Length: 374
Ligand code: OSB
Ligand code: MG
Image (cartoon, rainbow, N blue to C red; front, side, top):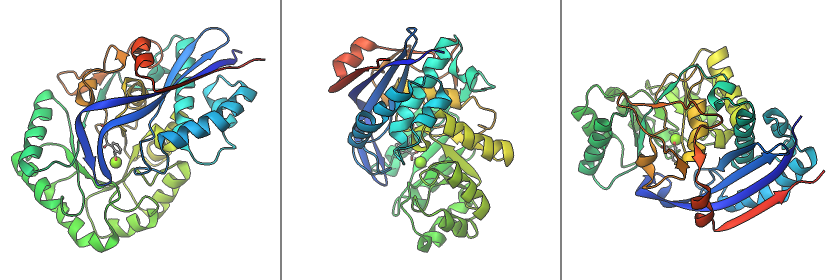
């Protein structure tokens, strides 16, 4: 069996084509820690750590991820030398939390395993479709007019679903205006945990707007509160921040907190954990899931695309084309949108696109390479 031989980390910063604003802040440029792993037979794989600049979406930041990777995760993997995805997760078990740091390495090893088997990653994990449904997430804008203009542009490009970011004071009015312009468009809202149960009557007003779901209205640690809210609000609730692993999904089911789960590999610790949540929510409960995004570069996007081919993914994902995010992506070819609002699952091995190593080396602000010896 092949052994893990190298782990390399690159801290890069990528600039978005336009600022992305949510209830927790505005992003113009974002960090990513890219992870390259190689085994002792020359196979290689890539992953991405999606932790942000600050602890806003989650407690992790790119600095905590760098710290936990270099001080704890790399030493654990140097000891186990695991190059199978399942063993990598097992090797990292002593580290509590820090799912984004773990996911960066774990997903790199999945890419490596797929490349070693000469299979597209989506086939290796049991994907069943060769085109994934693509939606677009639209940040909070300065005005309703700007929002309408941006929605119209993305719909013209072909995106199958619109998600509008909301927060108290930016909710019913803009959403109602978009709905009046586009009565039939598949649409939902994402509050990024900015409401409390006291806002339930206000959230219930959204029931008349034909939304597919309300994503993460309440605090990230309030699975029980979402169950209370779901008894007041008819629109199905989708949990994002609240689902940090399989046990949270089980709790959400037992309490009745959500109909949908948005699965993000970074939030749950990687691809194995994403699959476990998919298999429970869809396989055992028969409920829908979809794949969320964290404004990933083309590398992390590759892992999202693979997950979006799983059988339980029946709602369009927060996986848009490279040009939705960046002037220039760090992979070749970039991810593109088909006319029918899908993105093709690649035919090539692994994530199916190649990291542009020259560009990555040029962008790298910090770099560390570990050679693992027997
Ligand atoms: O809550 O889904 C979210 C981006 C960063 C952090 C949190 C979220 C998002 C998005 C963007 O909505 C989705 C994408 O990558 O297109
Ligand atoms: Mg969200």
